[in-house]
Image 1 (cartoon, rainbow, N blue to C red):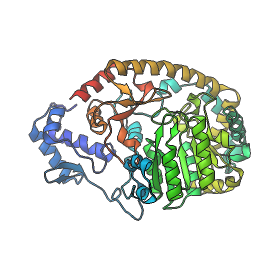
Image 2: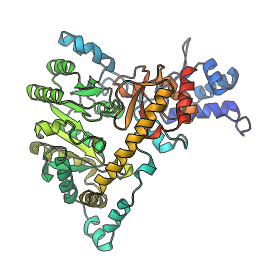
Image 3: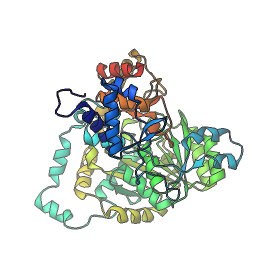
Image 4: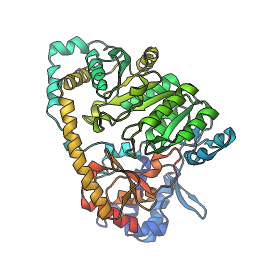
Length: 485
């Protein structure tokens, strides 16, 4: 809130607020600032205060004025489009692709564009927008994740003798053998058969996805990715110079007609899927769709990466592509950050035997090794059943939180575009959530607007909420009020 009693003028405070959001990328390059009149109403200040603040932002080179259009966040040299480096398939082209009857129609969906503002939510987590529960966050609250067994597990391997045994030299290239055995056993519970030799530990699941991309792809290759999908994946592939083919995600799985047309027209090298408790919709793949995906992969010679990040929240009988395929054309990616300790960054991948050495070479080039202490401690937690029991407690708590959040949403006039399942809800607001997110920042809430989940940032009335952090009626009342303004 702007304070008249502050040592800074209202103009300086407002300019500083916008400047910080631009630097934190909460306002992306190219984003339009509110009009002078809108901003004055939203902030409770005079139009002259807003004009003065925008003048300061202009002087700092953070925004630019466009005649008869308003003020826009300035494109920096880091975010300017470079057609030689930035290749992207239009997100908006996904829907037309389903009815296209020729390769040319599909190819017309591919355009050059600048990277998305994919790190905004991550920066928000680090910076701490306010002390309020944040609806846009992708992790569970700290109090949910607090345990005693993690500290005990670390202490178990912290004697001078143990530390000297594995800390004064590089660890095993593929990761701690004990953890790989524990993961192998864990995967059997979801019918994924992977020997320890097929498993490589990573610095979180995102690192595993990056290892796969850098091993199997080259700049200019086509990659199919579900849409809506997580912006980090779009931006990461974009940064590597890939051409993204967005595949609409439905309740039963990806749009198979679009996949088939893409496969025929563009010969993609990879399909990336969050098959179970998809982010952001919560959808889970059904067996018929899974079989057809694998048929397409075999017919058109592409690999499938199954990101099972949310496996700890899902039923073990949920359909997994890797279970049906037996890790032939599929690669399984998982991790422990969502359920255990986000800062530990322990993930893994399980791959076909003929790809393991290539993937391991890429890991060695990126990190050399992974932290043996954390991996050994985590292996002990898995073997002792601590993580399984912890996950059961979290699932029960999440079920209750989801029910309360859905009831609060409906009581305040909101609905869901997908059945509420897992951690996230795909909420329909009826307004542009990009603009809504800026207004909610003034109230201390960081949102995840729907535009973030598309390959091309297009206006959306949807947004992703975290059920565990939307338990307070005051948030829903504030959201309702902001949507009505």
